[in-house]
Length: 245
Length: 245
Image 1 (cartoon, rainbow over the protein chains, first blue to last red):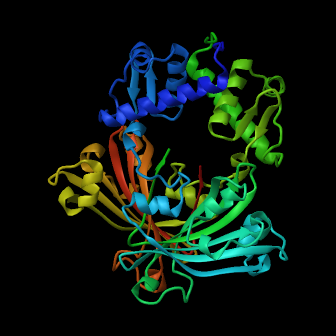
Image 2: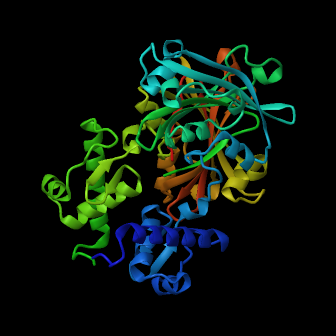
């Protein structure tokens, strides 16, 4: 049932074939109902073994990108044609997200403070901290062309960072700071809501607009919550895509 | 390589085992790093064959709920502990979503009209309609306890429905209407944004609040776009969860 190749690298090969077939569907503009190449053709095209191709096709079926009709062949599904740009379910930094939207934003630090967890009960709950634990709270704006795009509040347990970060690091990535301290962020549990900004953050018309608030508890590889982020995205400029199945 | 059981039902069995293991993790409060039962224990517990259990474990690994450490066993990942309630990525009707939030809403029809696609360019583009095609446009409110929860505009190509629906059907599910006409909705491509309501829909304080707009192009099993829905969720009462990986 198994090939002589170790399972892990076999799976990785299958995942590469899966991605390649998925790219093929998109690049060739295949539509729902279009036939995909046969197993033999895929083996030849990618120079990989039959088991890898079968596993790739199983992955594609599972993700509902491909459907097998017995005796007829394999076909592209409607899901494959959806082709979601920048899905909200992909874990990426604000900088990555804004760059993908075509912005080259500046970061402005509004405040950087070490506080007691008791001062931010939401963050304390998300990070599993006692009221007397210390948190590092970084409040920033991302701006481009004179417009505020994102207002963010990042909260990190001070104990995880080995002290508060240096001033020079505050305009950079909090993910990178945590990574350096040995806590690589791999996923998050998030919530999206429509809100106004907290009062006093901004003045002018932007302060009266609806903002898209994404609140996230970010976990490291070991499953430890290491960052609680509240990112307010300007509603008139930023929205998110996703697919529902 | 295949069991004598047909692939389809074998897959369904594996999916059932996958769900059962996922429930087990949640119900027993397992945390990231906790060991899950062995293949043999799972076979015995669920009374299913080894291939079904292996397939289920492969699904769980792929969804990053379980990780295999060679020679040590299988362990719960951080993702399994996230336990997202009502994820935005699950395709469900507004009624299902509001019921899950504990609301028993009333539906009020604001308007039901047959128009030319040209009057709604966004819907026409999403549904792939020519300007002169006819669309059925249904505008409704979901209310509970005297509060508006959702304002929705559903747009369906008239040609797909075999004519405009009867008045009695207008407070019910548009999904069910399409289902009856032979178009079962299976997935959607969606976008979420923070907005104000279109002017004139409501008066009073709710009209000045931020609303969470989910715009969805819903596809049938054949990949045909059959419904373009714009659902405005009251920001102060409704938000959505998801995980990012």
